[in-house]
Length: 266
Length: 262
Ligand SMILES: Nc1ncnc2c1ncn2[C@@H]1O[C@H](COP(=O)(O)OP(=O)(O)OP(=O)(O)O)[C@@H](O)[C@H]1O
Ligand SMILES: [Mg+2]
Image (cartoon, rainbow over all chains, first blue to last red; front, side, top):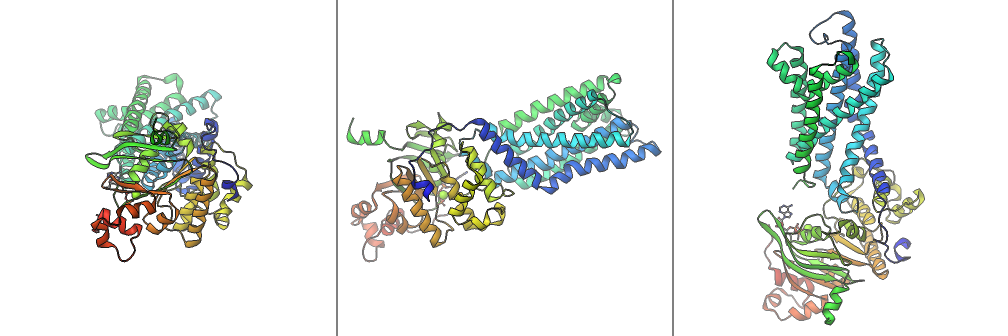
């Protein structure tokens, strides 16, 4: 206990530098994320599986799922990864930590609350980008198509946008729902519903109204955006509307997710 | 300025007419007290009395419905960052990220208080609370008492001017309990103040300079343990429950009643 007895209380003598605070949070949040095998599996292995399975079929025959071409398949794989990391990873971790009182403990330190949350969001975006890089490289191998640096840049931009959108949706869920069990369940349901809406809707097999709804849905918008940036010369209104929808979801989701978020679950 | 006003102005912690509500439920109903520099102050009260709510308001974790809290002269609501830098906190119910190791948790919290501690320095601190063998273990895989020891280690990592402990000895073995009191004494010797809650009247009597008894969100009485006994030994409610010499526990039960709280 020499550390305590040796000198007078020093607390408050200095203001903790925000760089050190933020760096410490990032380091801890990264460590937690990397230790969670399930998250990594969802985030990276499944998109690759989608890419490989559908991508290889694309070579043989065409069907409703694959009629969109490589851009569609890459978009689907990336969208799946982004959505999984937010709706099944981020929201559940936040709800669980809130239940356990992890946030309460962090909040009684001088760390600003925005830093606590931003660090969580930032590590998710970084994992999203790593996933994007891996999927893009594998896609270029499968489809025998080398992306230009510009195309890579655009894919990353769409991933950042899409990552932000699904995180905003996940944030809205943890903002509106206190119970960790319920957040878990809602995340999964939302995940399936959004996936089906985006996938089946965009295929047109459910009719043109559903197709229009799908284009404005998070998954539909993302798939269109990825396909759009991978074939920039054919950029059209569907892609623009995807961009508008994405930004809309980010704004609405973050507003709800911040406005109603509570740090404790009681 | 009167002597008392001067003492309060110089206090490490001033809680003034604090009101904490949860919806329509009033948990703390106008509580006023102060903790002097170098003082160990005990907050006693039955389950649900409002102890944790009072501490949470001091920690800036919840916004009081009314009243003010000043830590070292700083209003916690107005300047939370500066006030929090002076605080050391052990919460009654809280947790660390369960996937992090003990070492990583200590490093994280050192960083949050702006401290750059070397790996060896961190290991020293962890060994100091007897968790040397647990250093690389994840938080979720150490025992409840060990978790409590880690929580107490983190509470003093920034050598706080004011240490807030919410039932610090719960779950601790006698050795760790003894060490905790030594630690608290040392912190006080260095000029720090301690505000703690406990359900152990013997502990309160042995270590606290002053204690307050709180019930249903109201502060019933504040004094030194000996002073409280002297003041209330002839209260009929206390006499009724006392067996032999009046103890702090008799005063506590006499003032707060014998029924068990829901
Ligand atoms: N988050 C909350 N929401 C609603 N009511 C709460 C909340 N926290 C505490 N209460 C209520 O406020 C009152 C005071 O609770 P508090 O936790 O401050 O008591 P305490 O003195 O710390 O009790 P204990 O000895 O059991 O720890 C209780 O009636 C409790 O039910
Ligand atoms: Mg309590």
